[in-house]
Length: 624
Ligand code: ADP
Ligand code: MG
Image (cartoon, rainbow, N blue to C red; front, side, top):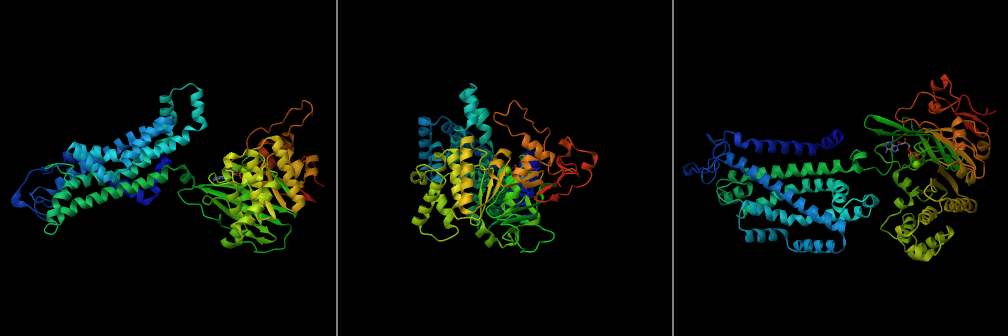
């Protein structure tokens, strides 16, 4: 709740709207207690008094009635009717929408055709017809305005309910034996509530206007009762002679509708959890780069991809999460480098930092460089960097279902990936995609080109992801846990495929995983990451045979061995440290059985020895 209010009030306009609206509502509540003139008492000799006249702060209208009093009583009525109409429309609209979405079938069909019928008329005409049928009056105006707004809510809520009803948590509720009513109230309703609140807050203003419109036409409040619309209607005749009678209610309508809309917009932003984490800002196309001393733009290359002291942080409020600290790695041509570590150790952030893909805010690249053939990617202008993404450096992401666009066919997505970077006739691009789908061993590749992502199995989608990464013949592929979602047979196939592609095409692969078994199969070298730092690095065989860092040893011990006897699998006790409160010395020390007091004192340097390096004072194996 506190977070919600802070977010809401960070938006200045929403705060202004909230304050104005609150003031108005309070004012309306105390109107009966104020020493106001009777709003309906006429005094024709004193008609059309100007504002600030004796006894009439805002002047009088054409019958000499006190405008201030009529304005306040009218505002009270208009607001109450607007809110009541919005509540009624929301209630019935939600009821219809949820029932239609949840039950589906003929109930859905019947209800929605009813809604379609209402929507077939221009709504103001329909409201007029309803009032004409029921007879003029404020209550009937309320009913008319509510009725014409029901479809808006019903359609919105139905769309969301249909999607939610197909989800597993509803199945789980059914499985537990709950009845329909209970599922709707306890499972479905809480999920659509934010939408309802937002829809109400953005439509109240509009309902106040519609009610005022009906009253203006003489169909809402009846004389002598004042509401904002009827005040406007009565003042119309004296537009030139006494403009204040018109301006006063007009200005009030403006203030009400403006403040409600500003607040509604703010509410929508603050209630949307996706906007919330990004602190209400749109992520920029490149991660924010704030390097105190920008490194030279070009240096002699060690490998195809060199990371030099790459440091990426997340700045969330007052907290700084040091997700990646001073990471240096070299990926040679045709090499496969494994990057391994527990979940949350910073592997993905490292990979995304290379081409500035970390979401910003909150991400910031605070130091270091990522060099492709010696050229610092983070110093490049955005256009150049964009031209490079997907063409020279391609990514394979962990979850292919969320990275493939659900509404485009596989073929179209792949063709787009090519044509973003170069002009190629459509037929040629499709042929190329087909070729690649065959390369990644997708059976029936032709028909798969016109399939949607949800029509493929997880393993096939992963292969499509790999094929897409290959469409532009990249030099480097960054594979972020590409096999974590797959079963072991498919995993073995995907690994074999990557290995073959590497040998045939001379690809360099940065392979991110948390599984030493996979590293052992595929990678020439491996870098072990813990709490955002590289703690050990070296040739895979050498590290597997004799790990130096205790963390590496524990990670290797976590891999089960088939037929290896009933060896106890050694889980690593404890949890990785939170990266916003890293300890002073070795981050692994609290979980380490070899730790001594001095491990926790100062930062530990990476000690290099030949091809291997380790960040440990008391390594398992002394590096010569
Ligand atoms: P993994 O090694 O599992 O890929 P990540 O690189 O995704 O881990 O995350 C590294 C660290 O960065 C984690 O501790 C995570 O909490 C933090 N982190 C990632 N994204 C954000 C974010 N948007 N805001 C704050 N912290 C984040
Ligand atoms: Mg990850």
